[in-house]
Image 1: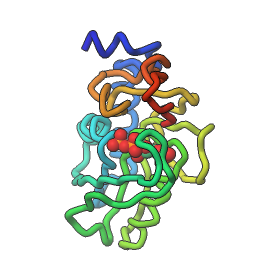
Image 2 (image 1 turned 180 degrees about the vertical axis):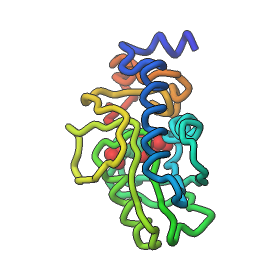
Image 3 (image 1 turned 60 degrees about the vertical axis):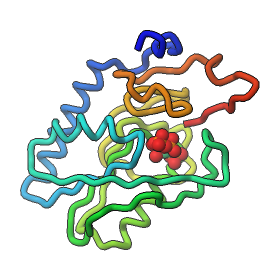
Length: 191
Ligand code: PRP
């Protein structure tokens, strides 16, 4: 872990801040969905670390499942805005109260696609819980029902977020040192 932490310019959200905020989100969700059939949909891969802590902060019965979405046509760090489903839900969400769990909302294109897709499956309700929100990057309007933190337009990694698939295991959200992605063969990340 020490090697990975050397690549971080600064910690944006500490482990303690994450724990506190996720506990608050869990309490809000538990209150809002009490007595309802709650079904969480986690968007892989980044959302999985957030989901694993969030579900333990939700104190009402609920189920969860995963979707994997891919953008294509662009580079691996910058979305073309076109997405497709790589892995779909196993169960029907018809009549259920669906809460999408995302690690970060950037342009909004991923969530716009997912919400449009899931809405056609006739859930009783469809809401969004995002740990991180970068409002300054928005290209497509999305309504976020639960937000952990609004963050500035900096490239963040950790707590599920990656650069080239690394850093997801850091227990905090940090800003990657620019020299980690400004090599001759690297692309400038955006999310
Ligand atoms: C990230 C994140 C969101 C999406 C947000 O996923 O998890 O799904 O980008 O960006 P947008 O608002 O501009 O659509 P990424 O494509 O990096 O995949 P990963 O979760 O597997 O790392």
